[in-house]
Amino acid sequence: MALKYFSRLELDEDGREWAQISGREASRMGRLLEDVLLYSKPVKLDLKPLNLSVILKEFINANRAMGEQKQLYSKLLLAQDQEHEKLIINADSDRLNQILLNIYRNAIEAAEPDSQISYSLQCNYAAQTVTLTINNKGDIIPENVLQRIGEPFFTTKSRGTGLGMGIVKRMIEAHGGYLKITSSVKLGTDVAITLPYMSCE
Image 1 (cartoon, one colour):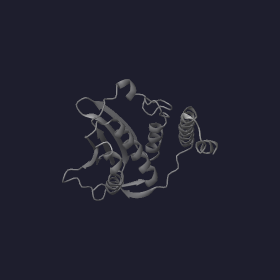
Image 2: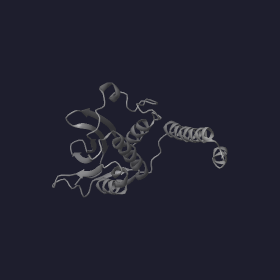
Image 3: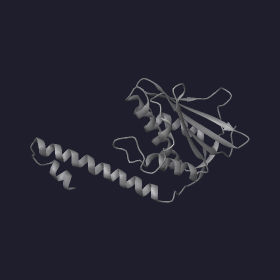
Image 4: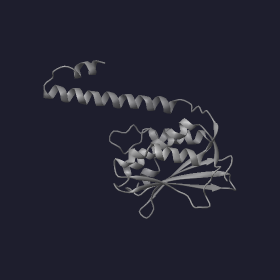
């Protein structure tokens, strides 16, 4: 409230600059506090049967504009015999959307302009799991960084909290799944989320 008050005053150039810096830092601390509270609390889920294929298509359509600002295009890659009309998982829709949004934002930051972020689904019928893989062809993640992704407060971003992927990992594990990230010059970066399914047809 105090910063909003100062922003309405007639300040000189230095004063305006300091007010802007203070506002940005206050916002950053607010985000950090929110992430710390979210990370420290037990993950509570409102589990319901959800069609993962439908959820994924809706997510891509709803967030398309975010990627298009950087000339990035999202595409769901499914073979003709893998439409998965009844790919049902037991999941919390809000948490699932939060997982997807966090990973998508990271993919946007890493991907080269005028490139594609792809999503693919693969069912493992023996294990009764489905793996959602999100791929971008951006900068390769070094092996020493890959090993630390999800570690609390570890980040390579100058203004990151270091909790985003840790929260994502905890949410996935709360669903009975796991997260795996690989990165190579040939294939780009794959973020793979494996979850148990109820039905995959």
